[in-house]
Length: 266
Ligand code: ACM
Image (cartoon, rainbow, N blue to C red):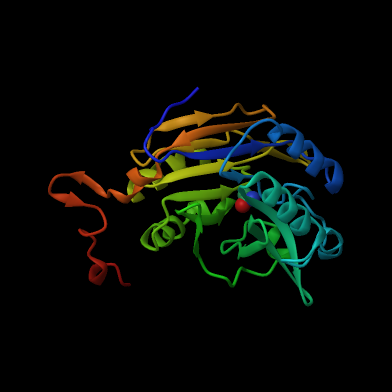
């Protein structure tokens, strides 16, 4: 399939699923079966990968939501990642007091950290609160991972903030329905010189069609792997995350050193 580098390789896994709406247990088992037999250091799973996406009401979303870090899905992922010596980024509806968030957890054995989607899309605004965690970067086996969710890609500030915080890999958990995300993420990778792993879903749900095309993009904007629009599959590829430390696009141009933030204010 794909190549990347030999020095300090990092195994990056992506899952593209086709969840059955509200059938969380079944959907989790299906994803674990796709990942079975493949070894990765980091797996990226889609947004709301176990519950499905297209809720009708806050009540319906609340029925699938859980608390982080001790809800049933988080607990399962903690045990699974401990057994496999890996980390997982996975989307889930999160309950916090009376509030619901469209969240993604980065789970690594006993540790679970939550990112709450900053830029809500469409009907999500009816059930979920806008995320309040901000963008953060966490360490997985010495590699800096930044988490973002689906529509966040449309706001260049999301990827830029993560990259400025040191992210080498953007873990992009998605349920893309608009057509531009996969190509757009090539630009997010290129302009920040980072890897991006977009995990999307396929299938239809209450009138929405999800566009698949889960992918990994290199810091030069090159596509390293992309799945089809209807494919249900997991894949792993080896990358050299250290190439994402180099922000030079020309001997005289380092994209981060050349920024002129004083001119970027309104
Ligand atoms: C989306 O943000 N799920 C389109």
